[in-house]
Amino acid sequence: MRSTPRLRHKRIFIDSSAWIAYMLKGEPNHQAVFDYLTGEIRLKSKLFTSDYVLDETFTRLLNTQGITTVKNFKTHLSLTEKQGQLLVFWTDETLFTRSWPLFQKFAGHKLSFTDVTIFTLVKDFKLDEVLSLDQGFKKVGLTVRPLL
Image (tube, rainbow, N blue to C red):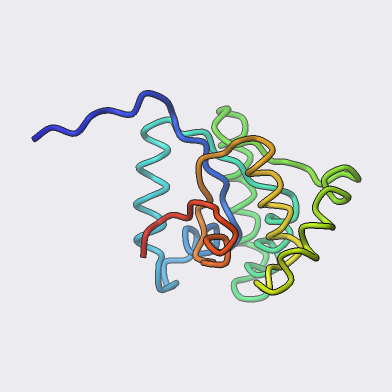
């Protein structure tokens, strides 16, 4: 039985946990994230992330791997941006202000403020899913990949 091809490219937001797993072969879910993201890149899905997510990712990579890994990751990001496959959202006063009430609303789910800005971006830009190992996004109704 043949599968039906997708009619449009997916729009995927990438969280820091997924970037870390993608970059580091020693991470427990490296292969699942790497395979999923590589497949979506081949299918020309549009990728999104944010400056807050990159801040988290750069800091984690610096603290666990060192500056060379961070520089390699940044080079990879820049290339993907230049190819038009990745868009980085920048947190401004409007996003911050729109996210604050949701941060309070979702306090019981223990989402970080960064996670709430991701929720706001995914809803505002009608993105299809979040590539993340953080299952907290499911609690607030987002589609999370990869399925682990």
